[in-house]
Amino acid sequence: MTRLAATCLALLLVPALAAADVPVRVRVIKGARQGPAMVDGKLDDLKKQLGKLAYQRWEQVNEARLTMADGKTQFVDLPGGEHVGLTLQEVRGDTVTFEVALAQRNTMSRLTIEKGKRIVHQVTAERGGVAYFVTVHAWP
Image (cartoon, rainbow, N blue to C red; front, side, top):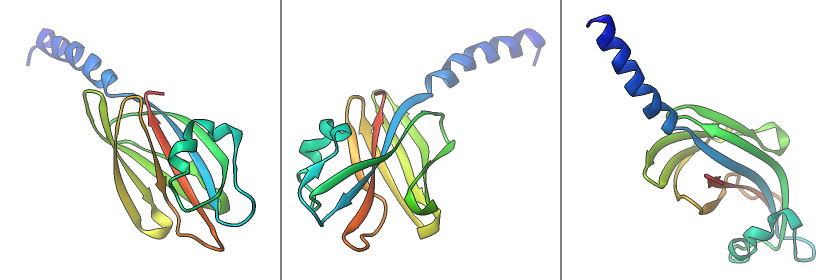
């Protein structure tokens, strides 16, 4: 390949690679069955979704804003030293698919999210009436 052809090819690929980057807001939330019903004010935008789940107390414990690149994994901390790994699997128009994994528990899920939507996903088993969830919002 000539130097000119290689340069042209590189210039064509750079915008395509940059377009694959997706800004993501990830929040770690704690759901509890015990105590009076309460939703942390930071979670007001999720009240409708959280009200459909079996937990009555909701608290945001961590938040991260990430820029996800295709095939790259980024980690978000959970209480107790565990980490949730998010990997961008596919971007198709206004839809994005992530792999969500906890290495410590050998679990993996795939989440597909449309622009402007968010998903609440349980990432730990319930212990003592408490479980942890992540909410993933692509293109916040």
